[in-house]
Each structure stands twice: as structure tokens, then as C-alpha cells.
Length: 403
Image 1: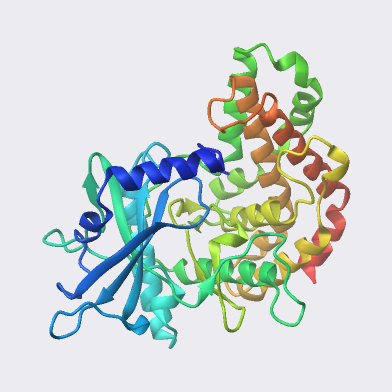
Image 2: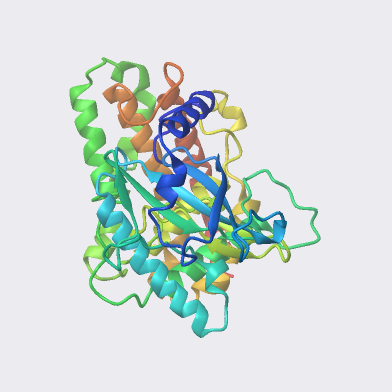
């Protein structure tokens, strides 16, 4: 739910300019791949569909013993070079510390159970001639990092249909997020950095909304009275999960905070959920927030900014797949209280995102990028319509969780 700073075409132009204004090869060579000087950079291409960071795939080849340029495709290796958007992630050093601690912990857990850490978790490469734990370089005020490329895997979007003969991608993604949560549940102290304070706290989001409503700098409140009333009618529920955590009834856990299914790489051979990616928002939070956000993202029937609310709704089929996949693993570590609030978390997270859209509309569209007037209001309306659908089907959602 982070802002889309640039539309697709503008972003392609931005990436092209970025590549021509820097020397990706020289940035890559600041990292220690463990190969010495035996690698030749063949090309650097923009990669992926992310909206926040700038991501490139680096293709390298290993030279032969006599230093000749390789011609065999088997000698090629791949890396992911990424510029962290420090306008969004304003504490990049803390972000990197969190990622390093989590990925190192995951790597050990995966190896101990006989898995393949090179494919089942992200792996940051160290910098040359620096602190042994440093995994970033700063060039021109920008923070860059290098990951090993996970081979034989791909991500899917909602709407990418499988043929029904293999694993379902929605179910597999949910199970992968649960494995991630399970494996980091025993991460040793200290507590991870809270890199975006209050990120998943609906109480904070409600307070921010109320501030925007009171100020109403663009005089927009009059045009969204039904949405303001929708928020007011549910105000008493906003603090439910945060209050339970404060009282110790729900534990704080390591939280991913961006659980879209395209943040899980699926094994191309088996179709199974392989590796959880996009770890910039990993920080302390609520495990069931991650489940709720996965439901919000995967179960929507319409586009996020759909103007025709008749096309907007909630897919119980997707919810059942998510619950089945998630609980196939999460029952190992969630408390009974957390499980009791899973269905509610889906409602609350969806409400929270709608609250943020509505507050940004009132504030003048200062956070979420818009391409047209009223887009954030339309986004809020789709979230609230989905919340209403969830409320109408809440007993069925609870029954699915309780199966």
C-alpha cells in the first residue's frame, strides 16, 4: 500500500535516465561476490514491476583460466542490483540492518532443515574492503544493495490463472508467508527497528484521518460525507488489535507488512511457494495484520480505484484459499486468540487502507500518487465497499477459519 510515485511510462523513462547517468558496472564492482576478478559484466537491465525502489538485473559471466571472454551460457550468473528509495524508506541503514538479520536467521533455519538457502531466502552480498556486516554502498546520496538472483522461480499476480492441475498460487503464497513468520518467530534480540513507526497501527491512522478532516485544506469534506460517516460508525473497532497487543493478549511478532502474492517467488518446477521477497517493511508488528493484508490484496473483485462500485466486492473463494494455505503452517505457532481474530484482521486492515486513502484525499493527495482528480476518494470507496461485503459475510469467514 505504498505510494506509486510514477506512472508506468514515466517510471520507464526514469529508469532509462538513471541507467545512463550512472555506471552500473562500477556499482556492482563495489560488492564482493566471492569471485575475485573472474567476472565480466555483460549487461544490466531494469527488472520487475515494483513502484518504490529502482531494480536491475546484472548478468555476468566467469572468465576462463586464460582470461578469455566466455561464450557458454552455463557460465552466466545473475544478481539483483537495487537502489533503495530513501524518500519512502527514510531510515535505510535500519532497513538494511533488519533485512540482514532476518535473512541470516532464515538462511540458518532453512539449512538446518535440509533446504536450500540460496533459493529459499534472499541473500545480500557484502561490500568490498568494508565492515564485514555492511551490505550497502552510498553513491551520490543513494543507497545501493546487491542480492543473489533466485533462479528457477517466478512471481504471479492475482488473475494469473493456473490450469488447475498444480498448486494454487494464492494458497501457496499464503503458506509461504506463514512459513516466513514461523521461521523468524525465534529471531534473537534485540528487537528489529521500527523503520516506519506506527505503520500498521489503525489507531494512528484514525488520528491522522481526523487531523486531515479537521483541517480540510482543500474543502473536500462536503463531497465525501457518506465515507466520513462510514468511518465514524466503525471508530470503536479501530483500536481492537492494537489494544489486544498492548494488553499482552496478542504477541508482537516479526511482520512482513506487504503480503501481496507477487512478493512470493514460486518454484517453476513444482509451483510451490519458495521465497518471500520485498523485505523493506519487515519490522515488529502483528502476524495477523499480514494475513489481513494478504486477504485485502488478493480477494478484491475490482480494481483498487474502480468507480463503478457494482464491480467491487470480496471473493470468498480467495479468502478460503488464503485461510487454508496460511493456517496449514500458522496453526503451528499462532495463539488461539490470534486465530480467533484472523477474519477480523482482514476487515480491519481493509478498513485501515481505506481510511488512509480517504485521509489523503482530504489532505490534498499528498502521499498516494494520483493520475486523476478524486482517485484517492475512489480508492477509499472500493475499500469501504469491500469492508461492507466482509461484514455481511463475516460469519462465513469465521467458519472457514474455524474449520
